Image 1 (cartoon, rainbow, N blue to C red):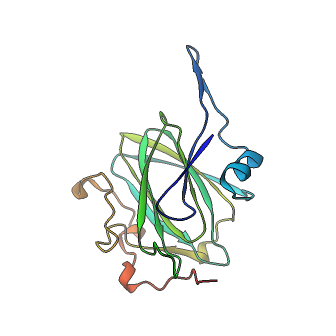
Image 2: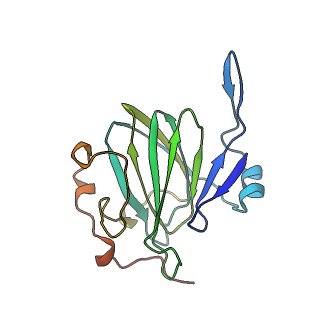
Length: 186
């Protein structure tokens, strides 16, 4: 596997080594020992999640507040998404900045999001199946989110705004200027 560092410290693109031939392909989607060696991130995943969404669906920008913050390793196994991480760590040089990576069934890329990132994705194909491994269990009382369309953050979701499909909940999150981060400087 190869590891590509992004403009936000700790957010990593993981490219697995894919072995393909006329029958199809094979790749190791996760190996804890190799992941720790290659990324410097030693973590234990405790929960796997999967969602299926149609074109234009935007999910996010979500996070869990400490002490239940989550690190996530995400990938798209059917279709294609633009996956986004927004740095919400107090004092970070990239606070409020975002990175976006296309994840698809054809590129097999994964994205590692450390604790302190608001996370979301938009579906770019007719359908997408999205999977993520979390290093903390889901705690509904610790849910947090930012507005997906915050102009201060300025995310290009690669979907025309009139085609965006949101949940009722994702339609009403605060903007960064009205947000007090729960991810305090250590």
